[in-house]
Image 1 (cartoon, rainbow, N blue to C red):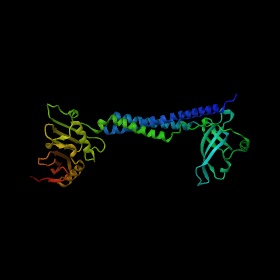
Image 2: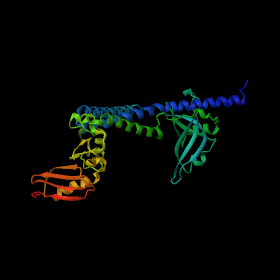
Image 3: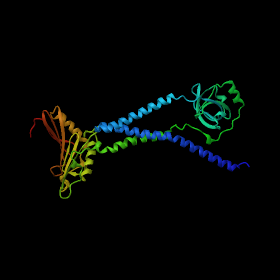
Image 4: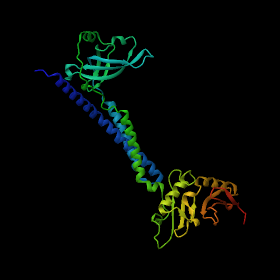
Length: 379
């Protein structure tokens, strides 16, 4: 007995779902390879950069070695694929299910085809569907119409690689004129399993960044902070000792504290370390910042770490290095101390030293210069 209409529809839906599942499973290995390779590449590049910055030879060698290995594997894979000759293409007939021109400014018009390919009996394969895009001469386009038969060339090992033969031999032309091919179901649609779509490319980019971020995260302590003394990493002193002090040294690209934003970020780090924003002294050098404090003092006798105009301090350093008679400054230092009372804010002193001697200028909490002592001046 024949299958009922409802039964045929159910079977068709099952076949279509199975076809989609096979297509998704076929594209998965290429996407996984892309994701894994992207993550490894990102980690290797980050390890190479981190090794150079920290002068860590093992990290540098590991990152460079992985990169070299990836390059060699890619080169060997390319040579191997170049030596392997693809199997000879075969000729078959195909039914044109649908076609759509996507352009028309030149003599050769890009056309998207949906075909049902009927392989020869030697392949032992039933008819299947495929989508292709091929340029067709504007004069020949009327010869292709939905429901018509075309001569195609395909590769048995890659059935999705199909090309319409625009100038078939007379024998194949006669076969095409008298052939009748039934439409294959949509579930038989084949596609290139190694074709990676835009979503997978985005995932590859995310994996690349994630691999790099993982390496940076592992070495974040050495990259961004380096304490001068082991005691600097200890928590604030106990209630028996009311004073505290800590410092940090910055390293890495643009490690100078004169870099925009670096002073404030370092001050926030020190505030977190000591557990308070109120300190009695701040010292800032090119690569180092230190703070001292006494938790027994009232806020009026301290300096609030986040109230200072850090963004203006690099300008004060430049002014001190160029206007105080030190022609070749060898070092500079900023010392911030509480005001003398009566509503006076913190005092900022910038000191520069060179072969000519030492000079300094003073500024208030707004960055305005209030006093200066050039080389040779007293008082």
